[in-house]
Amino acid sequence: MEMLMEYMAKGFVTMLSISMPCVLTAAGIGLVVGILQAVTQVQEQTIAAAPKILAVFLVIVVGGVGFVKLLTNLFTDGMAIAFNVIPKSDNYVLSSDYYKYTKPPFMDEFNAAEPNGINKDFSKDANAPTGLGTKMKNQEKYIPGRESADPKPDFLEGITIRNKRGR
Image (cartoon, rainbow, N blue to C red; front, side, top):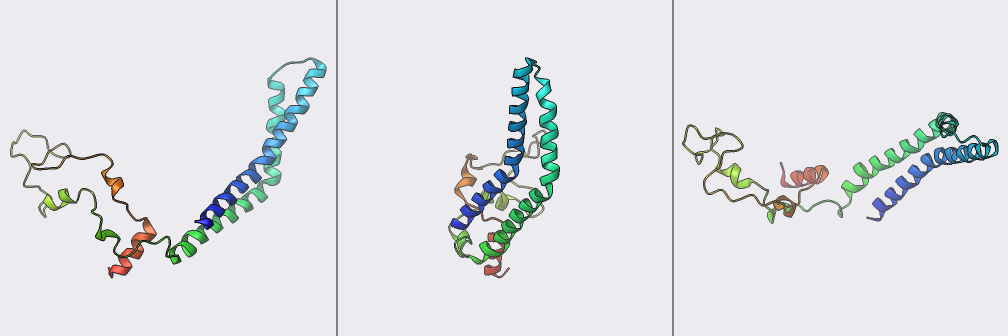
């Protein structure tokens, strides 16, 4: 968990390293233009916008390569953690008997269907609506939040579980 917190902190530092030069440049230009407007008594709001836009654009052009390198390093570190560190750590991988105590949601509906996909419990009325709106007999009512009670493994955990089961 500490590793993920460190990575998140590195992301915040990267975000500040990229945005801070642009924000400080815009603030500095705004201060200088504000002082000039106060001295000349010209109070036009649009005069400050053009120098700010040009200055921030120049900062992005000059520092763009460095910004891209910072983001590339952050992305590379994130992929290394995601694909090399976390799958090898037992703290982040589910045990092989994970599904022993859980039941996937809507399993009853899958078991009630015949192999050809037609459910024999549907109403026999020819005028009855078909498809998703059709009700089955003895169907338990859907309870919102039920799927949140059955945690699901993510992609890497699912691969690990399938490999341990021998599939």
